[in-house]
Length: 266
Image (cartoon, rainbow, N blue to C red; front, side, top):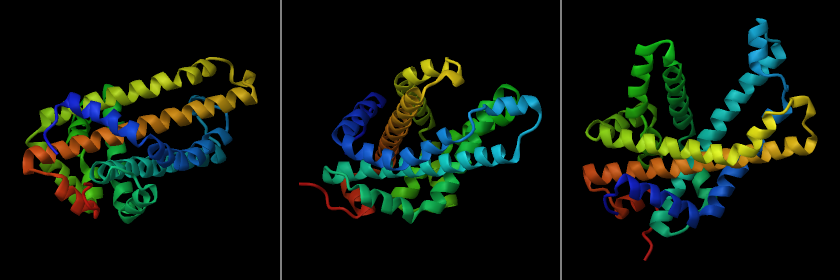
């Protein structure tokens, strides 16, 4: 393993994604297919309608809380399993999907806490149009905590230790990590947007006029967009994490193989 430019990281992201496409698809679909279905089985009225009316029925509130919890768990599981798959692909040349999920289950509690913490940080950051100072603090936290999930997966660190490790890695290379995270975010959003165009066109129609077939297509497109965006993001951030460790501490395949308990491919 050697140092990579941000362009090299992006190229290798799609190379790894291409080689292990079937495995990445299984990782995403086995989780997102049932998880995304919950959204389509719920009420068709937008949350904004209830907020404008000033009252949210208990059943509707329960549904939206359920969707939020399921989305967090599903996204964390898929992202973490895809991240684990990157190490397997680099070390062995193949991906063991079952082993990816086994490793996620090994640190699931810490991974969910990290994901929830970063999600709250993202929400505060996005809300910064109104509250600027907390948004700046949240953005800095997101940057310095951006490598925490790979640290938990590969180094076996728990919640606080993983955050501390991420801060340690990013501190000396924050401009590079910032550039990498911006690039990855743009690619992730662009990928999801391009795949979602048919679904967005359907949503422009009146919801009552949507046929069952159209709703099915909307579900399928949303499923593919989520799967692609989350897995590509996981691969790219994991490669950025590896590259940061290479530059700081001479990280290599032997060390990686030891951390994931696999032998280096010949």
